Image (cartoon, rainbow, N blue to C red; front, top):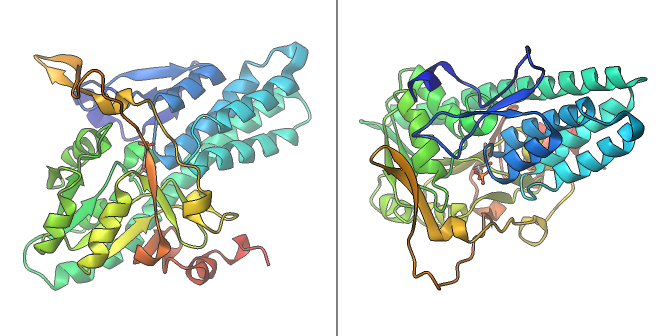
Length: 367
Ligand code: MRU
């Protein structure tokens, strides 16, 4: 995948064709495959089958999906087509709020255009704007997170050990990442950092994607099994945890990749700071009880039963359990606010409380 070294974004508009292109993340780290998204159905398929994944990227992809729906709308019932396409896009994956947020934002703007060519242009521009905003958000998250890592680096000899779960890197976020942005910023500032990468079963976003990203950036890292975090924390091997999130209530509850909650419990028990890095597009400003209200996606059990990898230079999938055993595939869990040390946002770091979040984003809170 050497040519991937020249890529630093997982999605872009091909200005020559007018179509959208994405890295097919299912094939990483072993193959770099670029896929064309030409229609809204291509887009929905790419989101559901996880060519693209990660909350901010799903949002940007959904935004471009609205553009593609407008671009390919049949003249006879263009408005109905667009409305139905937006509803289908928003339902493609339920947990990450960025998807509905971005689709609603683009479709609301499109309504304001007078004619169809203007709608297409507005949708394309707004999707691009959202992508650039997420890049800027991630860059700021990196700087605010760096301020948390610096004191840890100053008070210890040897590397600051940061544990992360899933992939909240540039592959999930357009550039820099959310959870990885402070790590990249620390490495760029010359701090000695080492990352414990949870492999993140069943789809191995950690061992496939985060490890690949960190390797490309020459950041020292070690892949561990999802269950190793507690042991590492008990033995003083983790200085902080930073994870991303798919949806976080403004009251502080965090939905993220399944297994995040167990890391938060272990961090709490071992006095290890547990931070969640997120842009404002991932806050849910309506919900107040994450455990009761955030929809948790259940995916195909075959993702649990089958493991994919490379054998003799050929990509293969193998069956692990008995062929007749049932499997269940809960994709996310909710970490209650009380287990979260703080949020790292584009506007700074705050407590995982309604007051902490409102302090940074007062304009979002309805009185
Ligand atoms: O199922 P995925 O790979 O889309 O899940 C992604 C995650 O859980 C990430 O941690 C989350 O979206 C944050 S990405 C910045």
